[in-house]
Amino acid sequence: MSSRTTWRTGAAASAPLVVRLGRVGGSRLFALVVGSALLWSLLLPIAGMPLPLLLGLLAAAPAVAAVRTLLRSPEVTAAIVPAQGQALLAFLLYAVGAGIGLLLGA
Image 1 (cartoon, rainbow, N blue to C red):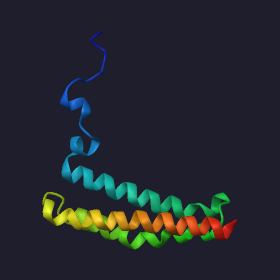
Image 2: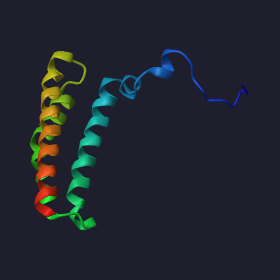
Image 3: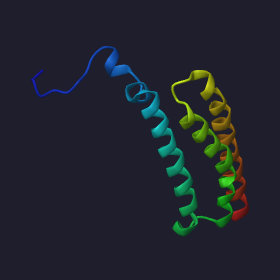
Image 4: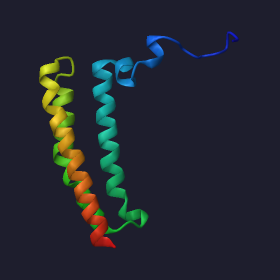
């Protein structure tokens, strides 16, 4: 390998992105991902997708709650545990809402 090679080996190479970013950075990344997903969901009808697809936005309330919970104290594990349940609820609501929206829009 040349000195220009950027391959990493060992634990640093296999560490998840959130571990590399740290708790605060990981919580900010989570907020960015959730915000982006909600924004893109709002833009889907503009792209020609059926309007009832917006039912997936039922997930917005638990998703925002998860972000707020996580950002409030990312360094305290016990304080961020509720965010896991909120994120799971958001995932399920989005899947069900968007699925029903696709069926209604077909």
